[in-house]
Length: 272
Image (cartoon, rainbow, N blue to C red; front, side):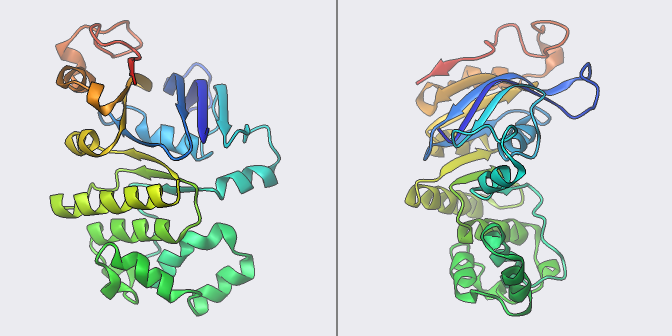
C-alpha cells in the first residue's frame, strides 16, 4: 500500500477540543491506484492531501506511508519517504522572477544535493527534460520565460511539468484544473494519468469537476465535513450520491450537531 489511514483525525488548532479538519478517517490506497477526491469547498480534501504528504501530523489514528509510519521514523527516514512523493498545491509555489526551466527542474530537488541545486540555478541541469515535460502541456515555447509572465493556467501546467520531471512514486494533486478551459483540463488530466500509469505511480487528485472525475477515474472518494461519505468504483457512484454530497446543510437535517451531513447520506459507502 502507498497510503493507509485508520481513524485519522487532524486539527489545525493547538487545542485538542477544537474542530477537526479530518474526523476519524479511514482510507487505503494501493500502489498504482488512481482516485479522485470530490466534495464541497471546505470538506477537507486539501487537508487530506497534505496529511498524505506528511505536511500535517495526525492528532489521532494511524497513518502508514509506503508501509512505514513516517511520524515514528527518524527525521532522515521521514524525509526519504517524502522524497518519493510529489505534492502539487492548487496555487503552485513558483518564484515569480525565476525562469520556467528552473522552476520545472525544481521537481528534482529531492534527489539533488545542495550543490547540484545551486548549480542548476546558474545553469539549468537538464533543459531538455524540462522542454519535453513542458511540451506535453503545449508550453515548450515558455522554457526561458519568467514565471511572472505566465497566466494562471500556464502556471498550473508549469507545476504539472515539474511533476513530470520528478522521480516521485505517488502524485498528490490539488485542483490542477481550476484555471484551465475545458479542452486544456481534459488534456492536462490525461497527461497526469498517462504518466502515473507509465511509472506505476499512485495518483490522488482532488477535483471540483465532478463530471471529469466520474468519467476519468476508476475510484471516487466523496469527502464532506472531514469525513469520507462514500468510497466507490465510478460505476457505482450515482447521481443521488453526488447530490447528497453537495447538498446544502440548511436544506436537509444533519446526522447530529457536530456533523453537517444529511441524515440520508451514509457516512461511508464502499462499492467495489
